[in-house]
Image (cartoon, rainbow, N blue to C red; front, side, top):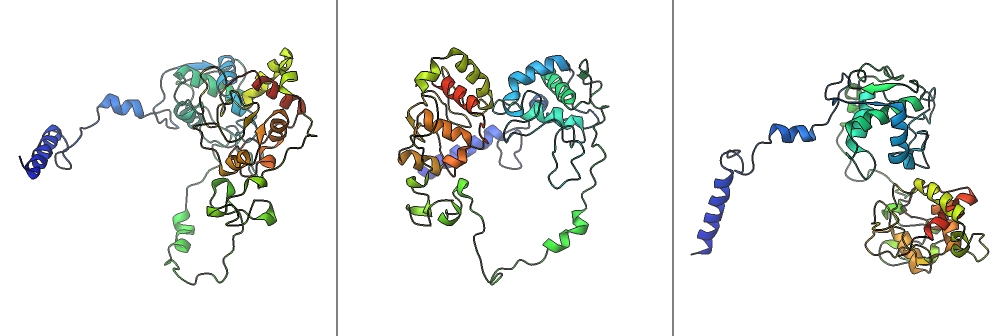
Length: 357
């Protein structure tokens, strides 16, 4: 059988399988079934359309929030580090730096339910039951002083709940006010006399570092792309005050305290039996391990360079890093602002020292 005939027959078979549906296009696939569409069609409208049947109260929501959400958003929805605040911020929307929380900014409670139901918890989306979502939303309302502690939220009363900023939005009129400015023919040559780099996206390795502003070596100093040489990583001196892992781990109370503080890290880092890399690398065996060297994790160029330059995660370097990560390793991907309390840092280091490789 010729090669051409084989190809013709295989094409005919493929078209034959798909021909009952969509034959007018590629002849492949079929129309989605109603139940398949329903499984993905999770949107909820301000008028309550799309809300699943269920309910949840503030008390249950507090427990679920502490277990599922507090690592990023704080026990009282006050936010942790760079993770967003969900409560507070009232009377700040007229400022240049408003605090946009569920209570102060979001106009419809349905948006809160829809977002949590669709996307949370971070890294484990759609693992919550319907009643758990209602309970979490109820607790967020309570954290914003919008309901009492005995409040029960359900599909019957969610759409009727009026948020404080429900009237704070206006219809997008950019087609009238801005479109004309941005619809002119694009300039393709000689558009600017002098082009300068004004900022450095070193975290993304988009622009090279500049020693004059502390972002690393000049272009070409460390090979292709001008990436910072290992020696640009901040140094940890022998004088850095920090507990040794042996001393810290010997104190069960310090380890227990570290387990609590580690909740601020748990959204990105996993420890314990079977821990796998997540948003950040798994931290089993981190003590005395070279920086940026865990197999299978995609570190930033800066972190890899720091490890190649001799940075090892002993107690002293971990303590220094946890104060403010980007002060020790400029260009690290880690967005955590740091632990300012020396006791919290010592506790976390003690806790991490209990996990072997």
